[in-house]
Length: 233
Image (cartoon, rainbow, N blue to C red; front, side, top):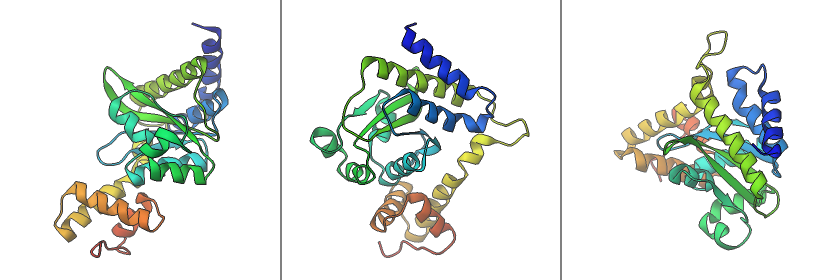
């Protein structure tokens, strides 16, 4: 193993030492920011309909993860779909900006101009993504890409092998995904109200959230609490 990778592994081991299972995703996101030329990182699980954010290094990273989930588009979803790293090196111009124009504008509005998405999983099965956010255009060097893939490999190991309960018996993974349960509850309510299928219901939920400058999670909470109805969409 190269010296650079050994040092990166040492940093990872130090940060996750003595951490409870529920703390691992956010801690590994923080490690990614230490090891790479990025200002934020988030980790999301792949699921039907919407990715589920499990952790982030900062509110900025959490915001961009939720933005992609709300839009149903972005490097995160594409990497999850194809199972290989997606390096959007310049969201201000060229191919990457045109591929995800709405997300690119939202990212640039908060000072992020490049995104690198690393798929989590193996043997052709993608369980989620590690998403890295940079405040200037540019790619990753070979060493930086190796470090990003190393963090992604450790994140994969954590998500697939960590006990599902903390020492106190609390189901940490289920707890982290609780908010997203409201999305599926809201989808069911919209399906019943409008007589449409799940895909169309999610599309309408996302469209209303985008039109109002809100996240899909926030809109779903409004539907479930009966403060929002999507009849007029």
